[in-house]
Image (cartoon, rainbow, N blue to C red; front, side, top):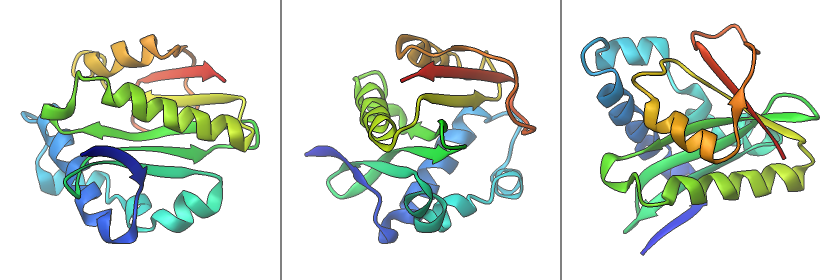
Length: 159
């Protein structure tokens, strides 16, 4: 049975592997695993309790037969807004409405927590076209840069 649940501490390595696998798929011709780990050590996943759960956020995993096959999270930006983070799914789990369901669970959490808007950032429009299409269907629209990270695409959704 495939289900969405809050991540458990013993699933952090699996979650990091999902992020690594999908990132290397997206950036296959320009990024090695070593470079990815240097650029993104995934310390937020390693310290998921303090980074998300204890700080106004949530980290969910998509589980199939007790294996993590997807991830998604909400991270607090400030009292009014949060950020959609770590939405990564293995290829065979994409295009079946699972990302939509994960996002809806995260939005429900964000609303219940009192956030009024959700933001996200993406690196590359061409390489992340499917993600951008999903986010637009979810109600996100383009906004100006809101952080100083390496991303070039910034979106927001009002809750």
